[in-house]
Length: 206
Image (cartoon, rainbow, N blue to C red; front, side):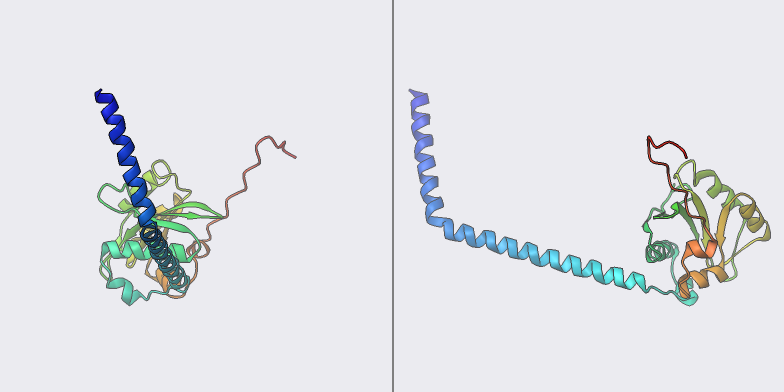
């Protein structure tokens, strides 16, 4: 008996719902159309914003004066944007415990590049200790093919010598001017070699 009552109630409820849907379909259709229009407008604005950002990055130039005025995190984001300008995909990853990586970039021709940012006061110098840290984590931890330390200051003589010996690239104030202000792409500035193409699986060596 209870089951029968429930079935009758369900049938009546379905009938009422059906009548409501039939009576209210113009309103539902209008709501759906409105939602589609709003979604299309949002998508259009997002695409336009992404295009404007891409155009801005393509012609991005930063003077040393502008760079000196940045804080540490802003400097990291600036390096990320410069890598994007150079044709890489890049993300800012610097935070506490970042294991000597503030920006990780993927160069389509050269592979992964890890950047360690050292924003200093004008005249500040970066020592060899930073080179040791970057060398120890760039490849083993971050899977990078190239490690680069970038500063708006300078490097000690020992830091430069150690970096060149152990293939840790460095960008000092003079090189930063060429990269950020004059627009020379970082891979060209540092003469980073293009990665050798991988042999297709199953193809025999010539």
